[in-house]
Length: 194
Image (tube, rainbow, N blue to C red; front, side, top):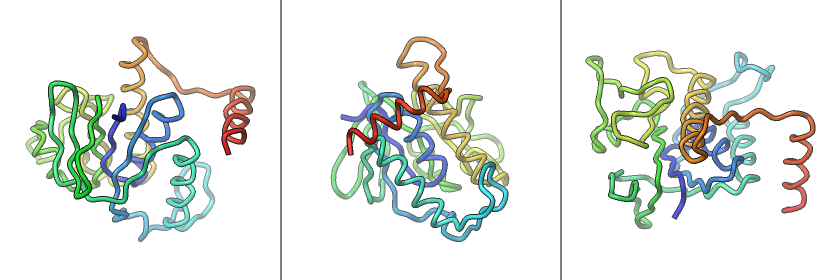
């Protein structure tokens, strides 16, 4: 059983996976590789001068792999709340976790099926931490915005969801802030594991 199930492997989903896994939670991502990033070229992403969207996604996938995220190339057909958390159903079976992050772009079907409240415009209603009306279920990116679809916004939404999950798990406000010393420590442990 994972701690966090993430449905969608674009910038929002992989950002949520990166932050949760980097900070000690077991994360699993379910992705069909249908991200809009394959049609994009990034000139406006902070810290990146120019990169093809598919190349950006390959780098992001390498990052989450380095932190031990379990990635499934599978379509999710249902997300259900249970007494113990959530069950994500795919063709290869059911997966359970305490938290779920929905990062399926503008497709809101799974959020609606889970019972997440929608706004009058038909977008998924979330608070500032990206939590939906269903406790411990988060929605990110294009599903929570009418037309503000931008990779950097989606990645930020995924990070916000991850930090709130980490805050709940640790019982205090959690901040993911690395210094040069902690970065060396993290990078050293990744090299040791390889």
